[in-house]
Image (cartoon, rainbow, N blue to C red):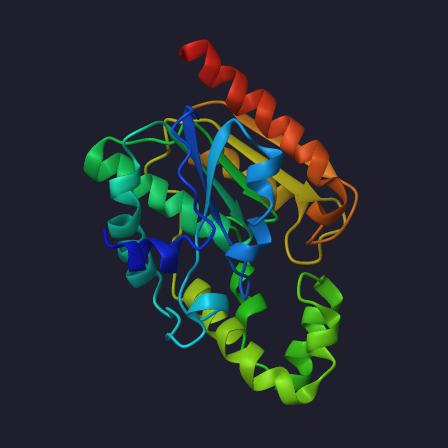
Length: 255
């Protein structure tokens, strides 16, 4: 893979041969790799690789994906050269859907399985009534919804002249999510799944978060935190501690 492609897809990547595991992090709808920018310092035992989809941040000039399978195939191609050591996935909201299906695809095609799949504020695509969150709506209605769930800097959302820079990518990501048709989990993963959620999340309920247990033959854990869709902003330290316990210690024991 060319240096340009690495810089494009993984803008904050720094090789760390001393680590035993790579942690790939996938963003929420409208979000980018910068969401995970500081995770390397907090998780020194892992080579943290934040994934940058086209249409945002350093890739703002590129067209975002609107078809789920297209995004999945591109991610498979980009990640494969980096799966030479143990790896894990972390997906937030839309990133959870992407990481789960990518893990399924890698398991089916290459017999490659993450050490663990971490999902946060992510609604299973087979859960009932999830697609109505991606219905078409006016710019004003979409801005109001974004303000209510957080995650996007309010200073950007309050300036209407910036909407043409922000909303097309968010709408494309919503279209990407709604293009996925999945009535059931399909072939479950063999790796454990750990799910994090906010107890006041307007986009996904606790019951829906716990439906992820259907996606694995392995261990399943669910951790609930106070807060809404972006509860992680107030509980990041606790979540990193949990990830360290579940992933780092287990990897060390294996090594």
